[in-house]
Image (cartoon, rainbow, N blue to C red; front, side):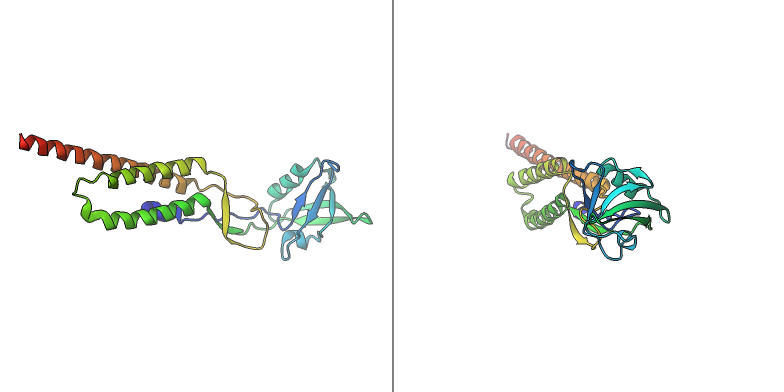
Length: 219
């Protein structure tokens, strides 16, 4: 139940102070960043950016690739302004003033291992409850299943670190600007998985001890 509860706690990433458009950079034009997918009611839209704009400089500094744009998004503080020199459709060059805003909740995100672990825990809770009356019988399949489930969860938690999907994604930007990894959930779920292995091993040990006691009594 602890593993089930921990795996259902989502992460809630927030936007950067400046957000609201996607962009791409081409090696053939290393000093430009092309803007597309400008979202309404966003700082990018409020600044006047349009689809197809080519950003040439930020505060008078020429762009050195997409990293310059990314740094501006992350470092621009709420209320702080930056000036963009923009080439618009190769027809005119305009200067736009972008302004940082208070970061907002961008999404409620579950990593795929979280939902996988939650489903496994739910099934396992049902299985343990259904087989509880058989616990005193010398059946090894129950603790072996517990151990296998624990090892499977450990492998899942260790190998699947990066992928996430939006359970609820607001229309701001995709991919999410700043996607934190749910370390607390991962550590709790890993502890539960290790506990499953330990409980299964302990139950097998108890069965072996019981058989040994029965054998001694017969002697």
